[in-house]
Length: 82
Image (cartoon, rainbow, N blue to C red; front, side):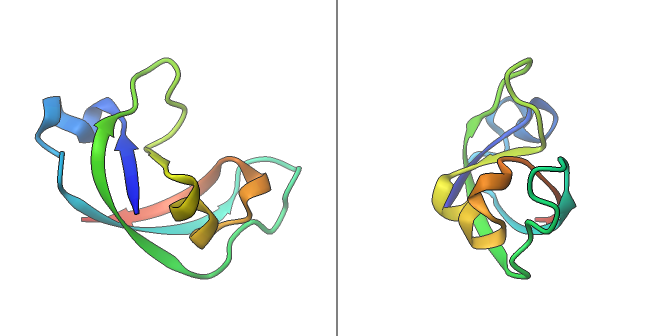
């Protein structure tokens, strides 16, 4: 389970290899109103998610995202802890 982190978390590569526990907390769009599965996932930061393309805190691998949320949601609110 892997993720790319936004610049503030990535810290010029300092976050590479760090693990974060990610939990979906809610929807960000009306397309999927109840996206969360209720599960959490632990991911390893392996890359930078650069702006302006990066629209969130983390860009999760498809496998990691589908563990915490309906894949059709695309983007969800999260809680994360190192």
